[in-house]
Every structure is written in C-alpha cells, then in structure tokens.
Length: 118
Image (cartoon, rainbow, N blue to C red):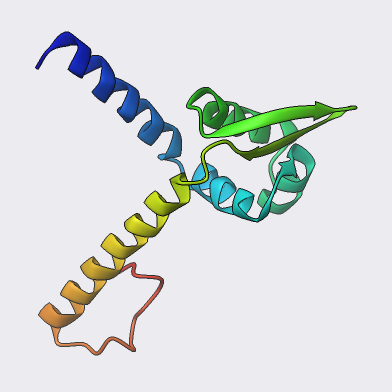
C-alpha cells in the first residue's frame, strides 16, 4: 500500500473510531432532527456537561459535527448529514445478521427481534 493510500485509510478509520461509541452514535442520530446544545444531551443521557462535551468534541475533530457558540451555550449540528446513511447501512447489516440467525435456529422473525440484535 502506498503511503498516500495508507494516510487516506487512516483518516477513514479515524471517522469510524469517532462513531465507535454507543453514546456518540446516539448523539449523531439525535442531530438528524436539528441542532442541539450540550444541555439537551446532558439531561437525556444522564451525564455531566464535561462528558457530553468530550463526546461532541471527538465527533467535531472527526469532521462529523460542527459547533456554534451562542452566549453561554454551544450548539451542535451534523456537518455531513450523509453519515446517517452509514447508520442505516449498519442497521441493515444487523437486520441481515438477525435474520440469518433466526433461519439457522428455526425461529420466526416475529420472536426475539430487538432492532436486529440477537
């Protein structure tokens, strides 16, 4: 692999690494409906402001979210909304895996379904 190719794949991995945390995945999906401030996230995920800010900073450094300071509040929005397409693709993989598991065990699709997790 060429050095320039390696750097490109490292950059891709950095984006995936930023998304590789359940709280950050949830935050990205919440931003689909529009911008949110740190206070909105902190109240829902039962975490202090510094923890929420750290998660959002990881997403910002990866280029996934943008921030805008307004007074004492910082608002975050999706910088590249197409990242949600990736989320839908991940859910399709989980669903296919669950269906495969169900067919291997002889269970019906209506039982034990939890958003494609098994």
